Structure formats: structure tokens, C-alpha cells
Image 1 (cartoon, rainbow, N blue to C red):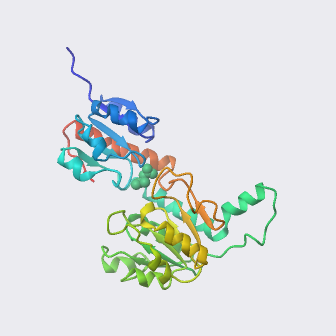
Image 2 (cartoon, rainbow, N blue to C red):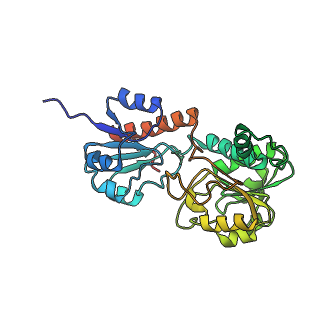
Length: 315
Ligand code: MLT
């Protein structure tokens, strides 16, 4: 009798090159892009490897049923949809693709920054709806404005570099980055988030999601910001307290927000959808052809390594 094939489930669309790599390595690949959670729970026991993006929760419930699983690879930066502790206890390797989509995420932040400053989505919707509203959608320039960056890691730094190209001043907060790096990156170092809030015209969050950063932008944070500030979140939904943001928008203290990520995803009904000064996109921060392909390929490399006994760069 022949040997059983080693099976990998690609649970989300990660681009063709990662899937090709898995198949070229002799692995049996199933695509489960449209599987329901129930199907996933029912069938996960068949697989030695699973490749995911943001939508699949590799949580304790899933892992409990994953009796043959050896590796979970996430085609993206964070691993916050993976229960890493449970996986590690079960001997399941957790890997990611930490550099794969940082440029794409920074570029989406810039897209939203410009959309927010110039009311692009609202003006587009209004014009195609038959209205020529030039004065209503007059915006603000970026040049000379202060961009506050919370979390000055790879994505925050790329955003800062691009914002500097638009003539913005950058004030950044990151307790883990060496002091001299801020000046090298053309940013002023804020010792405390409050130092960012005091001066920023736009505040963008690029923090990882963990227990210390949940609701990082809460009512106190908004109250400490300059009146008229605009907020961007292309990182993770739970970094922003939605109720506090809604209250700050309702009072006019925050004059606009651009949100790519949400506490619960997918989401099609949200208290801030339909606000005239809130621009939203459905978690597109990492979604370009290039980044999807890169992330899928790098995550697939980790799956192949884990399933063929080679070293894995764990998350
Ligand atoms: C990431 O963490 O890199 C992204 O959220 C990945 C994704 O878009 O699925």
C-alpha cells in the first residue's frame, strides 16, 4: 500500500504561487475558500497543514479537532487569529509572513489619508448620484499638517516616509524603538501617546493587537486630541473603541475617520457605516496582487519547511 498523502488545506485565497509551491513540494492541497466554519471543524482532522489569512480563526475549538495538524501558517503580518499558546502546547508550529505586505499596508494607509483629507469617496458617490457639489467636498491639504503615528514598526515607518513626501511632519510613538531611529526616519519621537495627541492633525494606528493595545484609542485618548483631528485605522479593529469614536465624531471633536478594520469581521452593518465623514474599506490593507502573492508564497514556504522537517521561522 502507498503512503498516505500529506494534506494541506488552503482555507483562504492566498494567490497562485503559494499553492503551486505546495503542490510542487508533493503535498496534497485542498482549497477551502468557501467552506463554512462547520465544514472546517468537520474536516480539519484530515490535514497536516493549514494556510490562512485573516478570516479563519485557528482557535482552541478548531485546534482541538486538528488531530493531525503540524503547522498553521498565516499569509500576513500578525498571528492574532491563531491561538498560539494552544497550538504550541499541541506541538503545532505557527508561522507567518511578516514582511510580505508592509508596503501594501502603508500604501492603503496613504490612500485612506488622501481620501479622508479630500473627501474622495463621498464626492464620488455624490457625483455618480447626479450632484455637482464642489464646495461641499472641499478638503484640507496634507502639506504642513502633523501626522501622529502610534506604533512605529515596519508599516508605521513606511507610512511616515510617504507622508514626509507629502510635506507632513511626523510625530511617532513607539516604546520599543531605539531613540535615535526616530530622527533617522525623519520623525519626532513622542515619549508618550499624549505627546502625539497634543499636536497631531491626523492620527494613524499601526500597533499589534494584544491585551495592552485593545481600545488604545478610547474616550480619554480622543479627548486629549486636537479638535478637528482625523483618525485612521489600517491595523486591527479592536485598537479603537468604536463607541468612543462615535461619540467623538458626534460631538465634532473628531472630524473624520478612515477605517479598514473592525472588531468583528466580516461586518456589513456597523454604527459608523453611513457617517458622512467616515471612510471605510473591508480589510483591504494587505490586499494587492503583489502582497497576496508574496504573503501566500512565504507562508507556503513555511508549511513546506514544517512538513519536510526543515527549520521554520516561527511567528
Ligand atoms: C495581515 O495581518 O498581514 C493582514 O491582515 C492579512 C490579511 O489581509 O488577511
